[in-house]
Amino acid sequence: MVNDTVAQAVGLCSFLLGISTFYQKEDKKLKVVMLLLNVNHLIHFLLLGSITSAIGALISALRTCTAMYTKSWWAAGLFVALAVGSGVGFAQHWHQLLPLVGSIIGTYSIFKLNGIALRVGFLLGAACWLTNNLIIGSIGGSLMEISVIGMNLFTIFRLYQGKAKCKITT
Image (cartoon, rainbow, N blue to C red; front, top):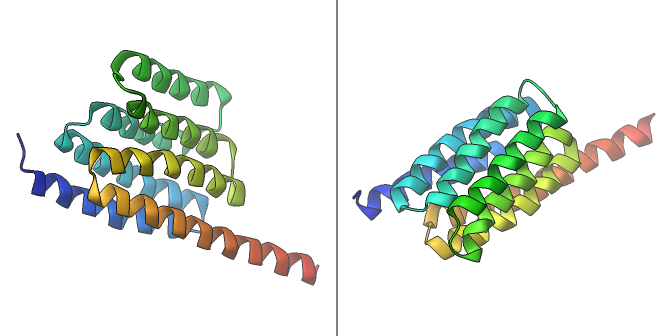
C-alpha cells in the first residue's frame, strides 16, 4: 500500500490543477486543463483506496476528452449511464454516490452548457465532490474543491461583467 503522504502529495497537485482549470475564461482551455486534473485525481483516489471516487474521476476524464469533440446527447447519456451503473455496482454507502453524482452534473454541464451556465453546473458538481473529499480525508481534493468554488464564482463574475459591458456598448 502506498504511503498516505504520497497520496496526499498527488492530491495537492490536483489542488494546483484545479485552480488553473477554473481560472480559464475560454471553454476549450478549461477542458484541456480539466482533463489533466481528472487523470491526476484518478491516481490520487486510487492511492487513497477510494474506488468510487476513482471511478468518478475516470468517468470525468473520459467525458471531458469526449466533450472536446462532441456535444452529443448520446455521448452525454453514455457517461451518465456509466456513472449510474458504477454507483449501483460499487457504492456500499450513500456517501460513495457523491462523486458519481458530481460526475453526472459535470457531464451534463460540460456537454450541454457553456459560459456562465457551464460554471454554475461545475459549482453544483464541486459541492458533491467537496463533501466526498471531506468524508474520505482528501486534503488536496478538499482544498481544490473549495478553491474551485471560489474560482468559479470569480470567473462567473468576470464573465458577467464582460456581458454587462457588451450590453452597455452595443
